[in-house]
Image (cartoon, rainbow, N blue to C red; front, side, top):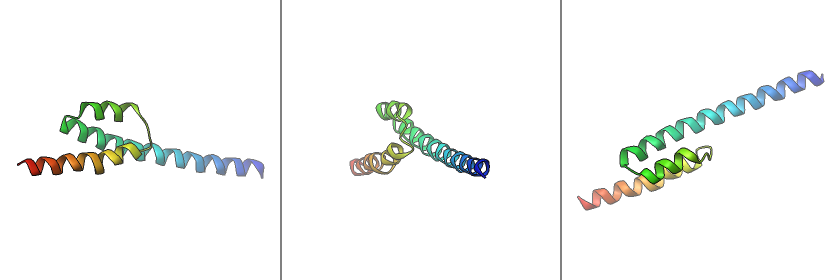
Length: 76
């Protein structure tokens, strides 16, 4: 019984870790691509070094990058 419970817990932890790795990889890739396209070197380095499970990447994509796009449109 103890071995079954241990195996089940390991499967659950493995699934959670796999999900977090994929989640982070997707957001990190999109944020790095966005920052490189916009020429934001500081953000690119920050996003590359700091791992926040996608939180910093989501903030950059939806808050920082959007604001700079809006400012660019206003300048035209």
